[in-house]
Structure formats: C-alpha cells, structure tokens
Length: 162
Length: 340
Image (tube, rainbow over all chains, first blue to last red; front, side, top):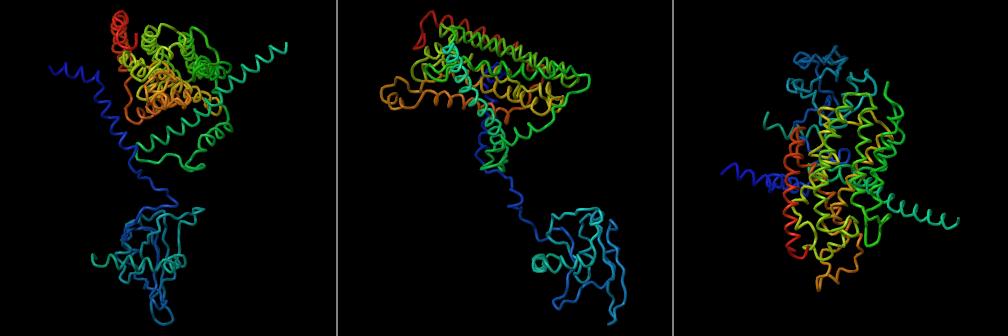
C-alpha cells in the first residue's frame, strides 16, 4: 500500500508544492540584509575593534609603561619603550601595535591596571600601505581622545560583570 | 517598386515592434530574477543602480559591451563566433508566429506550432557548436549534457503539444487560442491538465533552467557550454536563453491558458465588465505568472542528477503524455464538456 501511496504522491507533486510554499512565504518576509554604509549592525559594549590609549580627565595619559600588555599579548603585536620623565614618573617613549599581528583578543585591555589601552568599537578602518599597519602612541592617544565618551560609556556598561 | 519598399518597411516595423519589447523584457527578467530570488532567500537583491536598482540590467549590459571577447587558443574561430548567432537567431525567429492579441501576429502562418517546434530544435545547434568550437573539456561536457537534455525533452514537449493540436484541431496559433474562447474553465489546461504539467516541466528542462540546470552545473563543470565566452558573445547566449524562457512562458499561456482571452470571457456580468482590458494585457499577465514560476522553481528546487533528468524525461513524462493522448482521443470522440 505504501509504495502505491508514494507513487500517487509523486504524481500529485505534493513535496514540490510544499517546497514552493516555503520559498513563497519567505518572499514576503523582511529581508535581513543591512545596507552597509547607511545601516550598521548593533554592537555590544564589549566589542573588540581598533585600539586606543586613554587619558585621565586632567589630560594626563594613563599608561605607566608597566608592559603587562606587551607581556600578555599572544601575538607579540605590542612594542613598548619607556623612560623616566622629569617629574619622576615612568612613561612610554614608544607604544606601537602591529595591526597585522594583532588578533583582537582583548588581553591587553584585561591586563591593563590603569585602563589605559582599550579596544574601541571601530571595526572598519583602512590602510593605504603596509607601513601603516603599525600604529604609534600619538595615533592611539588621538583615537582615545576622539572616542573617549563612547569608550567610557562602554566600560561603565560592562563594569558590573568584571 | 515603391510598394515593395513599403511592404518591406512594414515588415521591419512589425519585427522591431516585437523585438524591442522582447529585449527589454529579457533585461528586466534578469533583474526580476535577482530581486525575487533574493527576497525568497531573505536578501534584497540589486538595489543600488537607479531607483530600486532598476537600471541594473543596463549597467550589466554596458559592462559586457566594454569587455574583451577572447577566443581560446586552438579554438575554431569561425564556429566560435558563429555559435552565439546560431543560438540567438532561432530564439528570436520563433516570435514571428506568436499571437499577442487578436490579429497581432507578425506572420500568421497555418503551421505555426510546427514552426515553433522546428525553431526551438534549431537552437540546439548553437549550443553544440559553441561547446565544440571552444576547445575546452568543460564546454564540451556542458554541451553533451545540454544537447542531450534538450533533445530528450523536446519529445515530451512535442507530445504535450500534440494534445493541444488534437483538442484545437488546428496548428495555427491564433486558431488554437480561438478554440479556447470563453471563461477560464473553457481553456485547455483543464482537459489537458497532465499534458499541461508535462509541457511546463519539459519547458523548464528545455531551457536548461533550475532544477534541470546540469548543463550549467557551476559546482562541476563551471558554466557549461559557454564557459569560454566573454563580453558581448556571452551576452548573446544569455539573451537567447532568457528569450527562450520568455517564449516558453508565452507559449504556455497561448496553448493552455487561452492566450489573449480574459478569464471571464463570455460570462454574463464579469465578461463585459472586463472587456475594456486589451487582450495583450491578459496574455502578458498569464505569461508573467509562468515567468515568476521559473524564478520560484530556481529558488526552491535542488538540481537533478543527470541520470535522474533522463529518467524523468524518458520514463515518466513521455509515457504520461502517451497515456493522456489516448484518454484525450476518447474525450474528443465522446464530445465531453465545453471543450470538444
């Protein structure tokens, strides 16, 4: 009996019509595509994008050149040189991140005792030559200054879980 | 002298009056394909060029125009460049006998149906020549598949159309439409339902479209017979393929869905109420439905294996048509329903 039923079903195109019903329904569903430059997907406050160095509200840079980030970095992307400043504090003379080596794991941010190095929400940035893959201290501080409000808000939102 | 010139002028005018809308239809059919399939897959499809992407087909055509037509080494140059012409020629020539509305035919010949079958068969030569002249194994394999498939399904399609012929008693396409005069239950799709389905399935297979697109099979043989073609030569194949698809849709509407008749033709109240709609609108609506089905199938069905295609064509569709032709003979002798 079963083979006969299958035979009749195949002639009545039952399964084909079921398939057509599925695609027919999806025709009227909202499409999930985002129109990228105009629309962007929402991001988590924990998003790990391009790096930045932060400053204290009085304008002093946070980084004390403890080199914990350099030590923890699994990709060896961070290079730090330091010196003693005239006021006796230790500061970096060089703070470079090689963005080709970086795997955006966020360990540098987690290891930082003064919340200086952070990863921001900037997830698309471009380089016009290979040399630009290494970003230095000035650029990192610049990014930090530009996005400080966003960075601070993201840290505050995530603070209860840390 | 002047009169011959005048006749020639009118013939040309009629031909272009068919061809220009046809090429536009092809252009927007490709656009519709990408949009409809996009939305069926929860995407958007092209929407950047012009309002809602409406200029996309022209952008594509321009791009292809500016591309180089490269001829592979050791390819047969003459045949290689002849093949696109061989495939677009018949695809365009068939349109001569299609009645778009009452009396709107370029050539109202009495064996129109035979002419259509002959022309669609000739289209295979374009494919064979293209694959052979390319000097590429992918093209050759694609050609073997495509031509075998087209030839096999032509038989099932021909048999299905024989049913129409028996029912209408004429080979003239306008005559076939007139034999279906009346509301939608008078049309041939109802008494010829199995033949209608067989025709539609073989029509899809005949044009090498999903789910019967092994001839393209991008996962196995790249793009089939036209892998080696680029630029305008490729565009011509593309044009021929889509012109053939639209042709299959229009023939389906003419043969089984009463051509230019409104679905309520001759019904007391609704019939006169819809009389103001020109016949061509009904024909295009019906053909448009089939065109949409083409895209719908492509978005839905996975590709058949090659031997499954052959099995379906030879061992299912052809027997079904033969059986139904016998049933049809009985129906006609008994003079059943409003049809015979």
